[in-house]
Amino acid sequence: MDKTSRQQAQEYKKLYAFGVKKADLDKIQTVSAELATYLLFYAIIKDGFHLFKFLVKSAAKINTVDAFSNLPIHYFNNNLRILKYIVKSLRTV
Image (cartoon, rainbow, N blue to C red; front, side):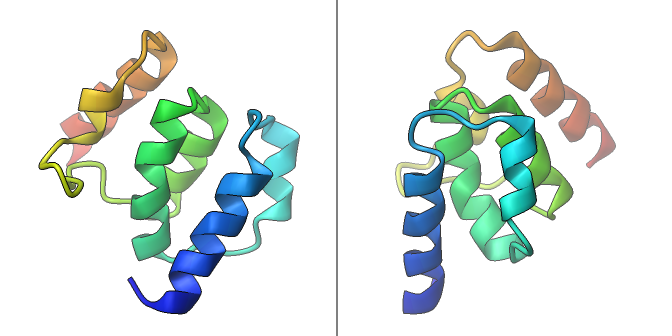
């Protein structure tokens, strides 16, 4: 990920640090597939279902691994909506 994308990712993380509402997603204009994939793990950790769903629709790769070789499902924190969406998305991949 280049420097600009990392800075943009940090801005999104700050914006959604305290939770994301569906209406807040209007603030995001475009998200590259690379950035969406990077933020996917953050959305799961923060239990941000609407952000997670938005990122998947923005071409985030749901079957990618992070620096620790973990899939997004490894960060699931009892949010059944996210878990169901992950399973549903993996069926269509």
